[in-house]
Image (cartoon, rainbow, N blue to C red; front, side, top):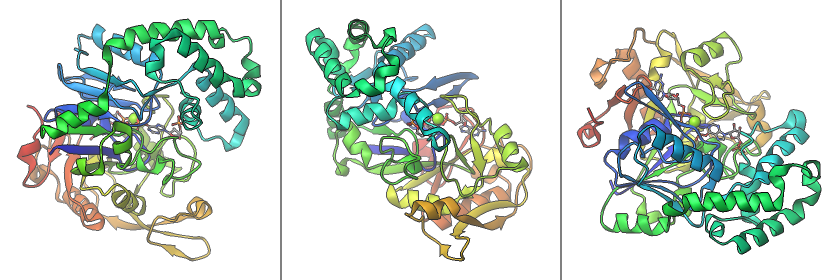
Amino acid sequence: MPGIVIVGAQWGDEGKGKVTDLLAEQADLVIRFQGGNNAGHTIIRDGETFKFHLIPSGILYPGKICAVGNGVVIDPAVMTGEIEELRHRGIDVSGLRVSANAHLIMPYHVKLDTAGELKLGSLEIGTTRRGIGPCYADKASRLGIRLQDLLDAKILRKKIRAAMEPKQQMLRPFAKDPELDLHTMVETYLTYGHRLEPHIADTARLCWEALDADHTVLFEGAQGTLLDLDHGTYPFVTSSNPISGAATIGAGVGPGDIDEVWGIAKAYATRVGAGPFPTELADDLGDLLRERGGEMGTTTGRPRRCGWLDLVALRYAVRLNTMTALAVTKLDVLSGLDPLRVCVRYRHPEGAVFDEFPYHQSILHTAEPEYEELPGFEGDIGECRREQDLPSEARNYLAFLSDHLGIPVRLVGVGPGRDQVIWMGEEAPRLRAAA
Ligand code: GDP
Ligand code: IMO
Ligand code: MG
């Protein structure tokens, strides 16, 4: 399994952190390739909870090389904070490598993110307000500050000045903000540079070396397919490409280096922030899913919107990512619900039927889900460890997904704990979780 990409198949928070942690056991290198600290990836090991925003979810294996690729945008305050916290908890971070080419989130990006949202008012995107969009915008405008710029005070000062210049008007309300004082910014960021320097590396080269030696590289995606800047529900998306193809650009490898693409999907659907969500349940059932699934944002603490599984959107994600396997998480949350509903097509109020994910924004906004009903299951499945331990209705539900999507379900989550998984199919032993 040399090159494996892990992608979110829905709107984020599918359980990518947990799956990455599980697969990382057999990987030699784990690399994040896009997004920033808008991500929040949770791992629960032996009752201890870890939440990662920037550091790859493989870091809990001592000494494992965990890289932050060039495609990631880094808030150095968050990254140094995360390193400190891990050290404090006794975690070895010596394997952390960070691309010198990764762009940095600056204090003005964070201010502009919030200001932009306030300006949009009721049309807001519901961003995480971490400065992600403005940072990627500067990258595209070639006004970005990269990690390597922190190693030279003169260059840093020049680049910050040039980046702020065209933003004068937008930044006027923050004119007296001490955080945006050029001198303060340069000094603060030089300090971050000093602290991150031991981790700076040519991360693309690390990937090549690992792949050429037939080692396994895990590409850890953040966010999810429907938040993709190009293929998601624009403009209610993030500012990077969370799909599998972006792993090549964000890590610096070629398409031929990717052997498998694992899509991670919940057994139902959630979304944080604004934007279309055809299967949303704005009722008691939605509240029940939120409560049972603990559906509160890992990064912002906002309640997640909840709904039934959307197979139209998931089929789209399977194709876009050339997904080879699916991990279905949080099956336990559906226990006791009967019937279980899955959306198999959309219907427009004027009667048109959509078997495929519509590209037109207004259709998506008005699309009504058409459901297929499947029998529900009961009882606590949190202790099931083999496929045959699951109630037959739960197995039918998984088989229905797999048949409909045309790819195997390889892993099923039955609880938040690291061991609460079922490896499906014949190849399970090769990817078995640690005892
Ligand atoms: P990520 O952003 O994709 O890594 O996902 P998050 O960590 O933001 O959100 C997933 C949440 O679901 C976390 O709180 C996990 O601990 C939890 N989780 C993951 N898998 C399962 C599962 O199979 N069952 C339950 N009940 N919780 C799970
Ligand atoms: P993980 O990696 C869920 C959402 C925000 C908002 C939109 C744009 O934990 O799955 P941004 O701050 O990126 O400009 O916000 O994207 N969003 C996420 N939703 N999980 C995430 O990450 C997300 N990262 C961003 O809520 O709707
Ligand atoms: Mg998350």
